Image 1 (tube, one colour):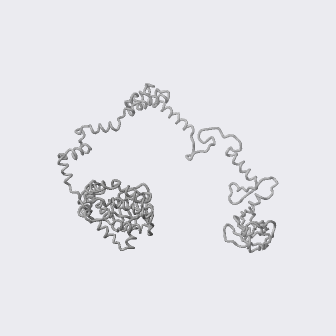
Image 2 (cartoon, one colour):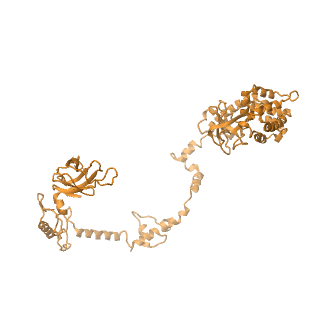
Image 3 (cartoon, one colour):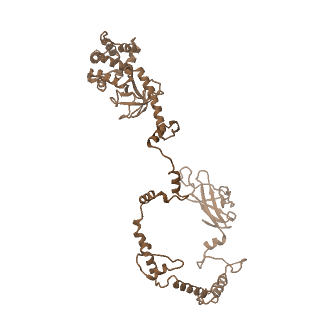
Amino acid sequence: MDLKANTAVDVLIGPFVDSTDGNTTEDALTISQADVKLSKNGQSLAQKNDATACAFDDDGYYNCELDATDLNTEGSLALIVHESGALPVRHEYNVLSEAAWDSMYAAKDDGFMDVNIKTIGRADTQETEATNLEAAAAAYSATRGLSGTALPAFAADAGGGLPISIAGSLDLDAMDANVTTLLGRISATLFNGITSLRQWLGCLAHNNADNATALSEINASGSGGGGYDQSAHSQEAIGDNVSNIPTESVIADSVWDEAQSGHTTAGTFGKYLDTEVSGVGGGSAASIADAVWDEALSGHTGAGSAGKSLADTEADATLIVADTDELQTDWTNAGRLDTLLDACKTIADDWTNGGRLDLILDAIKVISDDWTNGGRLDLILDIIAADTTTDIPTLIAALKDFDPAADTVAHVTLCDTITTYTGNTKQTADNDTRLTAIQAITDAMGATAAANFALALGASGVVTGAAVTGTLSTTVMTTDLSETTDDHYIGRIIVWTSGDLAGQATDITDYSGTNGTCTFTAVTEAPSNTDAFIIV
């Protein structure tokens, strides 16, 4: 809203509404002089100068009086009121100079706005009379031809009254003469005997003689003369011969097939090749190969080199030899896998199910599904060891030394003990069935010396365990294994005996003794917590 400077005025401010619901109008506020704050052109707020309190009008609006002092500064004016219980109210005004406000808002019978015009030729006064502008325009028209009369006709030099140049004149006659001379010279030289620009362009662009004169001019003797031939040099001819440009391979063949003898001038690449390459003494393929293989490996083990790969292979081979030496010392048949497998096959030939471990484990699983602890032998043996005086390691040691010709197996006692602890309570009918199945297995296993050897081999080397909460994926499994030595089980086979992976087997590629974590070649799915396995 525009206000007139230095002039008292009443303004309507609001609406004032309840600060709680933001809707109900506040119609009984007391808005004093001190409650109305003004800011002129963004300066600090101060109470208004007019002492009159604001009076209620209607619907939360109040009448506020401002005096000439409140409006003594042209520019922006902010009015702010914040009464207790009501939301704050802010209004923005634009204070215009008195002349500007009168020109815009004062009633004019003729409908025109006042315009002040600075007196032409004077800088000390301002005039508003229209006659001054009319007199100035008339004077300008009389001397510059701007009052509707035609411009003076063209005349030489400055006599026609046209604006003159900085040099003092604008000689159009001389300019016209110079242009005429230039055009005459162009016709006499560049276009001698040629009637159009088309003839020049045709001669340069097309592979045919458009104009003999143009061709003659292009090949004229003297400066710029030459042997221009349309059939070879025109744009059309060049385009037609693009397909004849030799390919990269043709150029390369030509370079390599070029005789060296003609390119041995000092400073040329041919000279460099002649000096640096041709003079290098050679050797036979055999002597070069001998030198390569006899070269010390220590000087060629940089990252990414073949020497580095050979050095790494040598280090790995040393570790493998060390490990296999240990196996040869500790294992039957000097750790030779072929002889061990042959022995296992001999044993398996006499076993039920052809010695196939998956079928044997399936049979055991059918029995163990009804057992407490899921039929896990390690848990059952732990209970037996804790609750009886049975010494399991002693029994296993005795089993390893078992002689079928002289010794007998008291399987009934052992199975009776197992029956007690698989259910923790003897259940005659069910346990008799289990006992019969176990007895049949132990009878078959103890039937031959080869079977006893197999049992002894399993007792001395098979490790049992189960998956535990941690990392469980298709390649990594946290276990309850107690072995603390890193890499202890690398190379051995892990076989799951329960869970979704039951019957699957894979090789162990890494082992962490810190938390019993096994890393292995990927299987079809991740094991779950408590899934049982054996390591063979």
